Image (cartoon, rainbow, N blue to C red; front, side, top):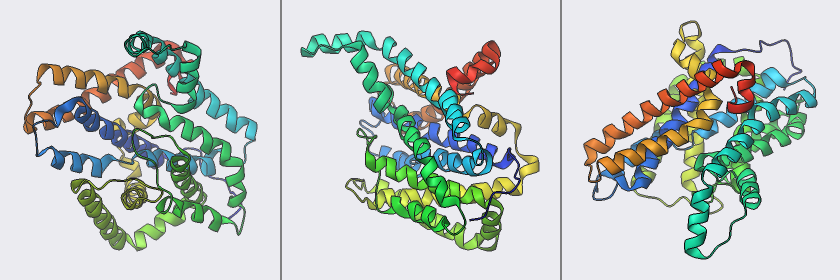
Length: 355
């Protein structure tokens, strides 16, 4: 790895990739939450829809970890650690903490109702502490504690950016092929942290030589596309066969990791090739990516609940169309709310919603 040279702080194609990443993450939740509400009952063909959406979207949070690593090498490297941690605390940890407090408070009546029915006494400070540490007040928030560990590990990983040490980042980058993330409901674990640390390390490595990586992709584009197609096909079959992705090393999670890392570099290549013509809508999604991440799950949950109540015996066509509608409406509602908060609070909105 080379000594950092002057590099632009803003890369429009990387910003566009952030927009694609949040679209994929929301897609992962739109159909999976719909399924958790019972949409798959009495629909034996639901497995085909599930396999397709999971193949496309499952594991897309890896994109966020990769982007964070790239941004460190391209933008924050060379700045003081005080600046680095202040930036992350203000734009990621603080919005997460405020959202967790709000959601815990709003759901407190449900805590009390469950406790009364099961003879359990809940204490607000204790439950709030658990939600903050483990990201469990809403399903998707598990990633923020993981990301916090990645941020805390950055000073050590940065030592591997020095000349001659880049191989260390690459070795960490293959670790997820051996150490698999743990599946739902135990989303947060040391295995999961190691899994995403690999993607973060790859991002740091690529960020130090992004242009060289893009040139390498150009030279081997056909082979990389064929490899991505192969991993995608295997991923689909493993979902279709309902392969249980468990254990310290899961074949399925290794395939997911390989597929998403390959997809990431190819998406970056495509966005870079069309950098001057990237859609404004995609760039807007990139700008609001973190606020969309924080807000989208509530809208998905509410929309799924409405659909299942209104159409309790929906067939496959209705479920498929509902998934697309929930996906689109969730993006629109989350984006409109994010824009409204930003307009109301100005630059202080980042402390509340991350944007």
